Length: 195
Image 1: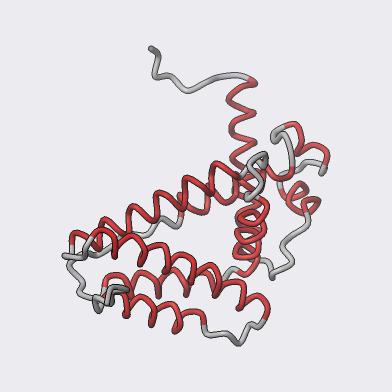
Image 2: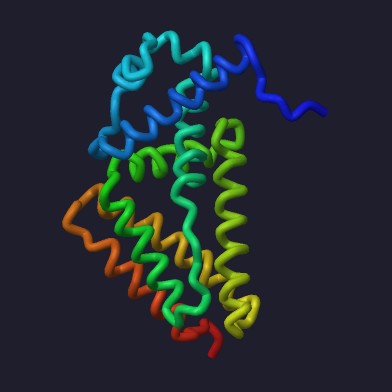
């Protein structure tokens, strides 16, 4: 199998698609909670709004690609040697989200739309939640937590983080960072639902 880069129109199409995703990610990260207009994103890369449809089957396909790129770029490293690894990681993620309300709104909008199994983002969110739950619960188990407790605690933290983001979009004075960090610290303390 050849390891050469694709040439010709195919490689140009891939490069243009990547430019569109990068432009959309930058635009959403810099926007308020209303998000940018697709027309503005298209103009950034020298296309019309209709021209975007040549590279993406639908608006939702483009938006899903933006979230996938955000996850790739913003991948969080866990410092397992840190006794407060969970709280510190949650604080970093919450602080980053506070600087990009457009991306937070995009994430939440697509998460809700993805509840429909026919939606283009359905599989992405199902996999994302499963992988994040497995990662967090695995790290908690490695710290001595019972597997059942680790799983519900990971699920609760993810649900709380998403819910706090909704509250923040509704009321920007909501201190999502402190609330999420406090929840993470409760989990780190070894709280259990068992009597």
